[in-house]
Each structure stands twice: as structure tokens, then as C-alpha cells.
Length: 139
Image 1 (cartoon, rainbow, N blue to C red):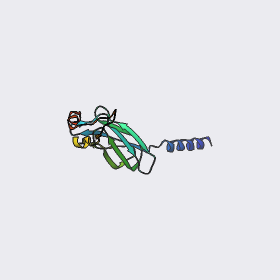
Image 2: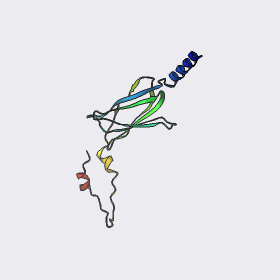
Image 3: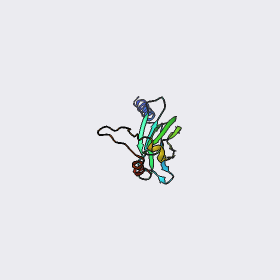
Image 4: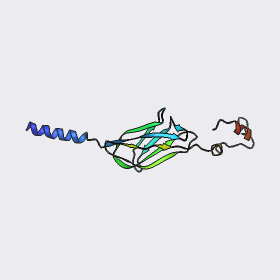
């Protein structure tokens, strides 16, 4: 009887600790090479599954212990860059899915459209001129 209980306990423990997980890893870069400090979000549409990661000094990131499945979305955001997305990423059991992303910078003219000039400034407000725009440190 003890042997039977021990076998049942071992079987239950093995099924609880079965590894139905994988990982996603890769590098985020632009045309000049790896980008450190990029924020990545891993999500599963229609579910409450969301994780974040930040690239290291070599542009590398990793999402570990991700449940096996399909339809994961990865979004990468970084200041002055367009958002990069990869949809329908599949995670396999006990494997690392390689997903690298390439980001593109906004054009200067596109980035400058977020600044609005005030036609009749009030105390504490000011007008931004084109000369001032040219001096902004936007690459």
C-alpha cells in the first residue's frame, strides 16, 4: 500500500512540475547596430498575459518561462524610434524562440510635429520659432 501511495505521489509531482514552457530571446538593433535600453512587451491578445523586458548593453533581451502556445505579440519601444512589432510568435516546449527586431528612427520633420507654437503668448508661455527648432538636439 505504501508503495502505491509513493507511486501516485511521484506521478502527481511529475505532472505538476512538467515543463510546458519555453523562452523568447533576441537582439534589438537599428541600422547602426544593437540598441541598449529598448523596452519590450510580450503579450497574448485576448488574455491577461503581459511581461516586459529591457535590452542590455548589447541589445539582447530574453523572456524566460513563457507558457507554450501561439499568438504572442512582441512590441519594442524606444524614444525617437518607430514602434517595432512582431505578431503571432510561437513558443515551443523547452526551447528558445529567436526573435530579433530592427527599429527605425523617426525623421526629424516627423518628430518636430509634436511641438506646437502659441500665436499670442500669455505670461509663462512662449513661441517656438524655426530657428529654435533647428537648434534642438534631434538627430
